[in-house]
Length: 175
Image 1 (tube, helix red, strand yellow):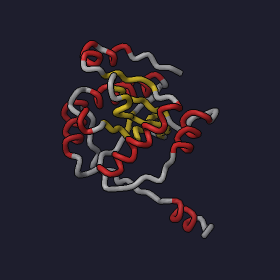
Image 2 (cartoon, one colour):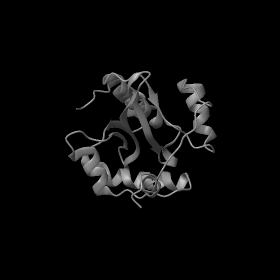
Image 3 (cartoon, helix red, strand yellow):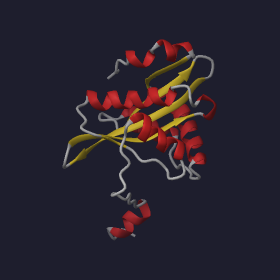
Image 4 (cartoon, helix red, strand yellow):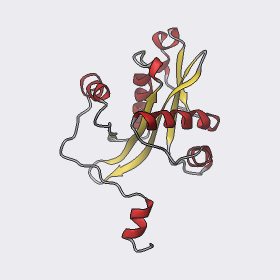
């Protein structure tokens, strides 16, 4: 479903040669490139590949994620946001923003804001009651932006827990 985002294609956005649109299957190579840059920034690594992104986002009857890309008229895809639906027993339908990344030289030009607005409009369009995301602890610039410009609340009372595949298999006795 194509989301109409007229407010995001404002003269400001177009004036600087940027546009934001829902991602297509053909964008997966660029999305993976940007995910890899994000992993370097976060001092981590990614194990995902293009085929997995294509399958999970564009080939399944119920896609596992919704993505948006930002393009520069001369440089192509320079940013992305990837989100998915989840559910809160307190609120109902929600959306989780997994990643939002803008190439460094394109930051500060409204691209990240346009992507976050795209995800937010998507969340509202599907009846989401909440939009959640995490921000790595050392990215203070993003934290300040989320709190002071976006108006998001930083939740200090919740801790993120995670099990990788090996830990999950061990926990359920499959290893």
